[in-house]
Length: 463
Image (cartoon, rainbow, N blue to C red; front, side, top):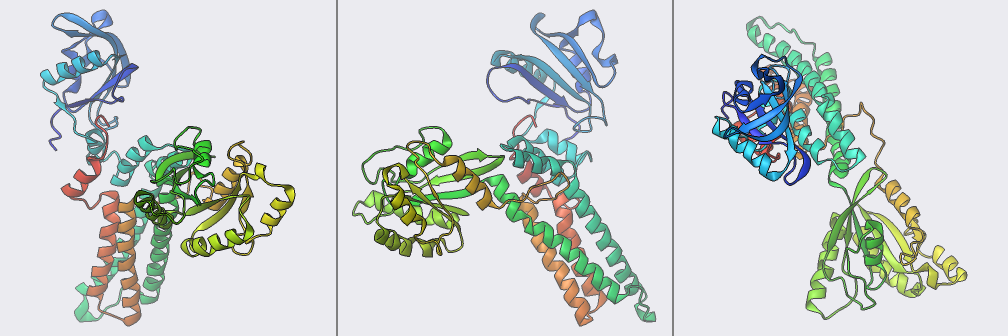
């Protein structure tokens, strides 16, 4: 990327809106904007102070294209660390495109995806993990994902990694100092204290890596498979929870032949609901494929809702349990007795005492009449078992970060083992530096063009 050029892009979503923002960054962008902007009162834009907003007109071919507001940010006190201009124009697609084309005709280049944030990283305004959290913040769809992205963007995760790398640097400096005096047989680093430090660093890296299971669930949505026999009410329940007619509902058995997925936000947490084909013996080839996919989705789910018709006989329920329970041994299983409006109170009591030891979590609902669904939502929250995330909590949500932490963990464990085995300092030093390398990969202290290209290519244009 050539940082000496001026880049520009529309930063607001595509389409018509009340207002659109066109952003420029790079040395000379204020002067470039001055050539197409006529401020009210004829004050020169290039003479204005930083962090000020100016009303005026964009001029194209001696005609007024639009009346706009121009915001000025000067290096290094801007998002990118460079001079930045933001033009707030009316949201007409015609106006947006004409202003953009006008700026490009004056010498600006169309920004690549994520190029503004990439410049912020390259100019030291944020580290790589913070830059990635910008994309997470834009994509946040719930209170939990928003909180995680904000925590990371504020630098809590980065600060912890910098702290660990500093400790490792002190660690390796003592080891390598001994190597310089190897002929004198001098020991600068107390091996017991080094062992204690290595274990402490391992503990912190392990804690960060372990948090990924929570972070990934919050970010991607907790997968919930809705399973059961045909006509048990799975699709009716899905539609009810989503508040829309997502799945076809019919009295005909085997209506749902493929997997249907959508997300729902419950109390700030995102759940990924997966409606599956009804489990039954069938000779229909297409339905059989759908049932096979049901079994695969069960493997991917964290929570399984087994929907059963409340009028099903106890004997048949036990037969179904013999098929279903082996498939969900490592899952959180909730037995949902649907169509409770069709059974007597005595029959409901019998169901309460059925399969209690195998499936202690159960609930009675009527998806048709919207009874019990609020209680079911509360059960989903409890089953997700996501701890409350505070502002100071550090939770890893990025797979790239998790993989780097796992590699750093392997390296620091080799250091601990090496200290126990009294191996040579040069081998210890190599393992310590490997641990530092992987921690540095997360923050961008160690980076390559391939890594940067892969990360920022996933951003939207204009950010």
